[in-house]
Amino acid sequence: MQRVNISTGAVWESKVGYSRAVRIGNLVEVSGTVSADGDKIIGEGDAYEQTKHALAKIEAALIKAGATLHDVVRTRMFVTDISLWEDIGRAHAEFFGAIRPATTMVEVNKLIDPRLLIEIEATAVMAPGH
Image 1: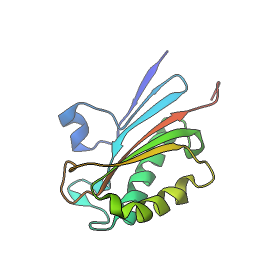
Image 2: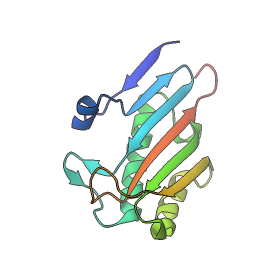
Image 3: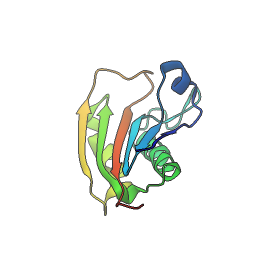
Image 4: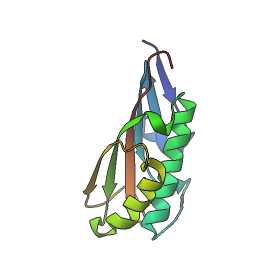
């Protein structure tokens, strides 16, 4: 099967040696995605806005890989403050309310930048022949 690496050109991709997403066959795995644009944090201090921005970045990576949000079967959310779950969940539902993938939300000690409140991964499985 052919492997396709999807890059967004983020500095961290080359520094750390990863791709935003990888597609092999009908499977797409999207790396942990945060609400950053270069050194700028989008939605700083706002878990709802950070979640929406990270999910929009995930959607863009999926599209580059030939998939859509409807192909997502699992999301994983790593949050620095679980008490913000309602804001995070509201943003997640705006993207996935009708799709309803399996999901996990866990609190972690910290992310790579202390201004980040959430990091999200996604797994998509496209229909055969897609």
